[in-house]
Structure formats: structure tokens, C-alpha cells
Image 1 (cartoon, helix red, strand yellow):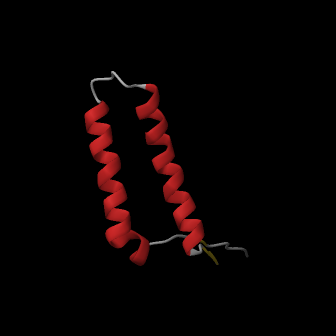
Image 2: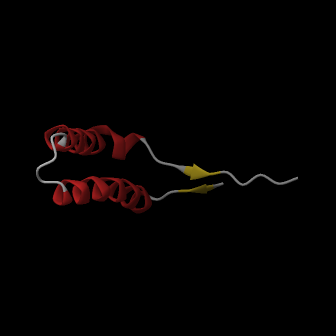
Length: 64
């Protein structure tokens, strides 16, 4: 098993946010922009409130 470090987890989450930030920058007039911005803020708040402390990821490598 390979487990993520806190830095790995932060990098993973930041990558997800970056995609949304880029979309927001590239679509300033899109009708869904306010909803996407609200979603981005919510997932960031959730991550800093409890996600960073309680969640993470790991890879299990199984062989015969």
C-alpha cells in the first residue's frame, strides 16, 4: 500500500480547484458561472473544514 502524504492530498485537491478556476477565467459571461463559483467555494470550505484532516487516498497494489 502506498499512502498519500498531506502534501500529496493538497496537490490533488488543488488540481481539481485549478480546473474550475481556469474554467471561470475562460468563461466570464457563461450563465452557469455563478453556480460554478459557488461550488468551488463550497468544496474549498469543506476541504479546509474537515476534508484535509479526515480524508486522504492510498493505492493498494495486489499481486499473486
